[in-house]
Length: 165
View: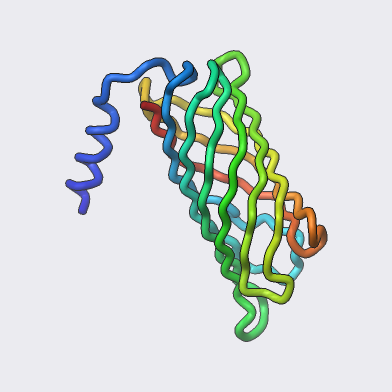
């Protein structure tokens, strides 16, 4: 398994590519999210996995799609919450220095009483480049729930690996 992952990373890193933020650049990201920040007093632990793919339509402007899974451990018997979400948005890189602003919409389905949420998702992050094609991307996001504000809104941290090709 380690050899397969290493081979995949080397293949992605060795592709001939353009600069990170230029028109036509493609982007893929895998990240951990949530990291235990929620308005819920009963939430003991929150953890999520996200996969993101994007395309630069113009220099410094990227459109992206995201698919994710979140798990929240809640006090009490059989109260754990599992969410599956899908969304789309836009990201703008400020002065091509790695700092970015993003905003999107996300549909979230959960196994809880109010079930389906629609979130507005502003995000601020930074890209630490390991080389011309791979970056570590920490960010802070806010999921503003549009249909169940108090139950669905949350603040979170996300950290992931971005691949530009």
